[in-house]
Image (cartoon, rainbow, N blue to C red; front, side, top):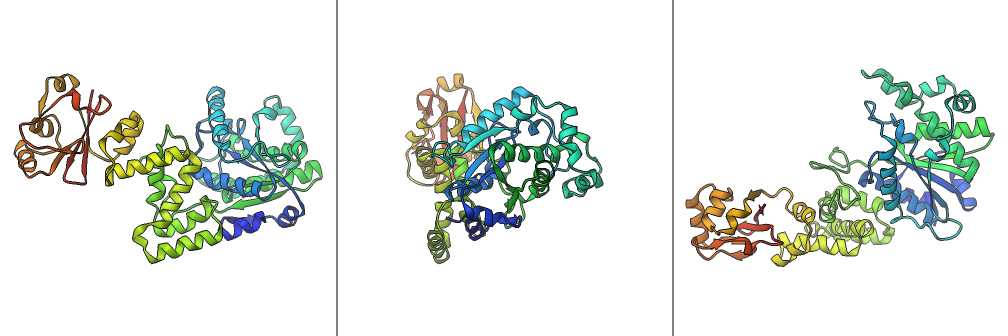
Length: 427
């Protein structure tokens, strides 16, 4: 497998420094990508770089995942309009542990010579004094060189300007590359296209301070065809941590991808070969309504991020709302999963003490909650057979419900017609 060719046909490659491909074709190369530790979980925006490392390792090279324990205390100005908040060491350590656990799902850390390795730049910066840094690193890179970078120019032209802390970021990241080149034989740094300036500073430092040669490769930044930001929803980031984004919501994110985006994403985010992808596209073009491409994409990514069991639960969750899975399935879910399943669905809270005495169904749906705007409308629809509680049709407007009807001792699921769901939470 040729790493660069793999990125090319998948539409991932953006920039590559001359000589990089020749180096990679000679034999095993050590290369690294840095990950930002501003949260205790990565999100789908990080997946493109994770996939780059997976392809790198599959091509026989040795990937280093650098988590920025030190750079997380500084903040990268690339692509940012203002300076971000700096993190405390305790928060950083928590974030680093979470990220490490996630990367271990994707990379093989025990496969011989090209085993993946995780490094934390805090380890080599914690005892590096300011005076030593400006003597050993700062003297090799001119201010003119640093000022010429787009990430610096844009901030200097903006209203907020740029702090010295952020200005030095490219030196700090450049030293990461130099350190890994010198101590781990890392000859290549990879990253998103917005990182090109920082990466090239590293190659310059290797050349000027170490009289060596290092290389750079960047991948395309992921964009949606409608121009909106990839990886964001109305509810915020789509995280790789099941506690932050439930597997059901994660699965739905990919399932709801547009046809155009699905053709791009299936190349970037899955390990399907070109023949498989073209066959899926042929099926998709013949019957777009079946969403073959989206289903294959969502299945592959959900299983690799959350596992087979979580994928099966996500499918059942979809079928619960749109198919024939029974109400007992709700009892298999924890509170976060239930709330995630009914995200965007109207929900109401009622007093568990009131329910203990028993509540007439009309009062429940039109007084204690507003499933119906009036008792008259509630009675009319119940008499027409169009209302259900916990997927069982309500037979009479005189029916009474109590705590014995609660799912998991907490929930009632009301339906108005086949597709209009309401979640009632008893507390």
